[in-house]
Image 1 (cartoon, helix red, strand yellow):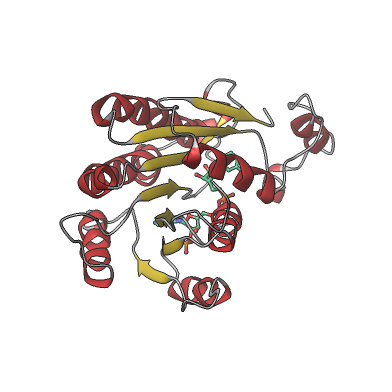
Image 2 (spheres, rainbow, N blue to C red):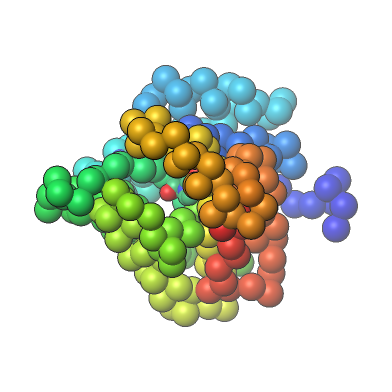
Length: 248
Ligand SMILES: NC(=O)c1ccc[n+]([C@@H]2O[C@H](COP(=O)([O-])OP(=O)(O)OC[C@H]3O[C@@H](n4cnc5c(N)ncnc54)[C@H](OP(=O)(O)O)[C@@H]3O)[C@@H](O)[C@H]2O)c1
């Protein structure tokens, strides 16, 4: 269908203000989708919301910290208040899961709290959010796309807590794909490295080169390249439970 003939989707972007979330939000706004942006920092959210105004008003924003136990309930309540559901359409049609963080946890300092925190932000809260909004997504034959990490199948050092959480999310989403089919599709983009690595981690001058050459293409990716694949998977009406690796 041409861009002009395409029906606008209501898309919730979790981690919308991040490097990748913002690029995905921009690509979705450019094709006419109606966005709800969520993250913690209200200023960054408001700024992005205004930037994404394509003549239909700023995007809706919902502030929430996914480490808080009440975060999922708060997001759903605020969503319902700003985009009321009807019998035929929910508050949201599709979800993009692009939330951080990427904490370095050197093995010798690894603590229970590191694992609990990363598991909560990267797996428990997003899975519960999808669970809470599954009915909305089903009304729209919706899709979920998550930004996974290639390190879950080819781990790198100093990130045990993060990689454990991303691995849990990978499995959780594939299980949800089974639970939610055929009404809702669930897919993952499994990324190599997009942004420059954490400068603190770069004591080794060869590390950057080594990291870039983990990908056969020999370089880091650009946020726009990730956005391109996310949009393709949102639109891939015959794919669920799939993992599309890029730059790994
Ligand atoms: N960039 C890469 O190279 C790369 C590679 C592989 C996978 N990924 C995955 O891609 C996703 C996005 O990466 P990115 O580089 O765009 O990350 P980023 O720039 O660090 O952005 C992270 C986003 O998550 C939000 N966030 C962080 N902690 C949160 C919390 N406790 N509650 C709610 N929101 C929170 C941040 O906003 P606030 O701080 O305002 O909350 C921000 O919007 C992540 O899931 C990451 O694992 C990235």
